[in-house]
Structure formats: C-alpha cells, structure tokens
Image (cartoon, rainbow, N blue to C red; front, side, top):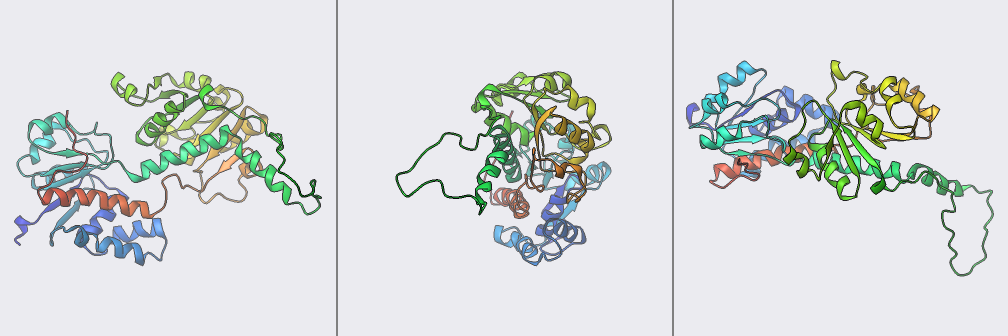
Length: 373
C-alpha cells in the first residue's frame, strides 16, 4: 500500500482517550498511550495494552493505517485535507474545515452526543457523514449522580449506620422465636425527601447532567439549570422540560445542587462561602465535576453549621483524599472515590466504539449515530 493510499484517521485535539485510540490504530505501544494506561490502570497495564494493540485486527481495520493526534489548531488545519476520518470532541469544526476535507473524508465522528461544535448543516450539504456517540462513561456518570441524589434524599447514610449499630454484641435479643414482627421506621431515620416534591439544580448542563435531568424529570422533580449559553426551547423540551435560571436563582430555589462545569481559573472555588450561603438552608450539594470548583473549607463550615443538610462528593481538591481533610470529620458527607465515570475498562470500550464506526464505514455500511439536520 502506498503512503498516499493509506487510510488516515485524524484526532482533532490532544486527549487521553484519543491517545488510547491512536495506540489501537497503530497496533503498538506509544509513549503517550503508555502514559494514559498508567494513569487509568497503574503500572501493571499489560492486559489493557493487549486489548488495545489487538483491537484493530478484531475490528477488521486495514493494516498500515495512519493516526494523527493534532496538538493545536494549526496542525488540524494542515492535516484535514488528507483525512479519511476525523474524530473530534470539543474542537470547533467550521464550514471551512468541513469544506477543506470534503471529497476525501468518509466520516466525522463526534466523541460524544452533542454535535454543536460541528457545522452539521455544512457537512450534510457537502455530502460528509457525521455521527455521534453515546459515551459509556456518560451513562455511568448519570447512573452515579442519580444514585448520589437518591442516597441523599432517602438519608441512606443514617439508615445504614442505624442498622450496622445492631452489630453491638452487648445488645440482647428482644424476641423469642415466633412469627415476624414489623415496626415502621424502627431506626427513627429523619429528613427523608420525596423527589417529586423537590427541585434539582444543575450548575452547567452537558451530556452527563442532561442524562440525569431527563431521569429526574421522569421522577417528577422540577429541574433548573444555569450555564453561560442557554439551551434552545427544543433542547430544553428534549431534556424533559428543564428551566433556565440565573446563578443566584438556582442556588436559592434548589433543594439539590449538582455541579457540572469544567475546572479552570474562572471556576476555581466557584462554590465558596458566598455561593453556599445563597443556597436554601438544609439543601444538599453534589459534586462529580472537579474538586477545585468547591472551597472545601467553606463547605465544611456550611455542613457543620447546618446551612447544608449534606453533601455527596466524588471528586476532591487532592486525590486520594488526605487523612487530615476536615470534611472527613463529618457524618453528613457521602463519599465516593472518583468513580462516576465507572471503571478504567470503560475507556477501552469507548475507544472500540469509535473505531468500530470507522470499520463500518470502510465496509460500506452506515455508521451508528448518523446525524442530520
């Protein structure tokens, strides 16, 4: 196969998952791929590496494929005209960029469901196929956030501890052998919420939180959201009827506040004393985004004073959580160790889902997730 005849797959930006896909396409280890595997699996990653380096053969991808991860916009613009496949997550794929690769490119694959960063109308007009992907880790995150929401609403931490207290060997049996006996709420668990009478507020609304929003609406919750750019009426309706409010309005009205914004300078300690004091007294905070978004000292004060009834945290400023973290002293915090996205193997599955669509198109089949406007 001549170099010019090789199938070329271009990844539009630097991304850890794209580095795994690059390894799969090349059928061999790469320094960047090794680094990513070590991050997800630890130093002993021989098994997942074997899964990746044999993935292309299992999918029937041609030998000698070229894989390019673009480190900046200049590299993307230079590479696009010779791309057979483009995989993109957040980089903006404009009409001009679509035009630059039209005629050769076989598929623009979005790594995610939301294609607003792609000019799909231009692609349809120019005969370029666009497909999206329901990421497995997004479904996992939605499951986890809903689980945290329900655990807080049902006060499962208190209920769990109440039952475990019966392990006490000093307690004597209360009953002789006989028929079963029932006693309603014998643990005297309080502060149990019914979701249908509560409001859930999302700070940021993307793919993961959008999945939760749909489920929460089905459970009868009122769902509010705040983000820099409001969704269209059609998009709000597609999520079950979510309502846009400003930041302060969301804090004031929500019984549960869930954070879904990226971490950076604008969001560093975005949820601090001022924001926490604007929340409804007795509300709950859920954070599955990034730990640095929340001022943990301010959160400690809000939880200890009763301003907040509780919090569910999957992410922290420092991970693993250091033993001197003040939040560890509190009984009204539900902890999980950064697992909303699931298990490391989910990343391998997502890599295979993308490359399987490439294989389908090369076989002359329609891609899964074809997007039209």
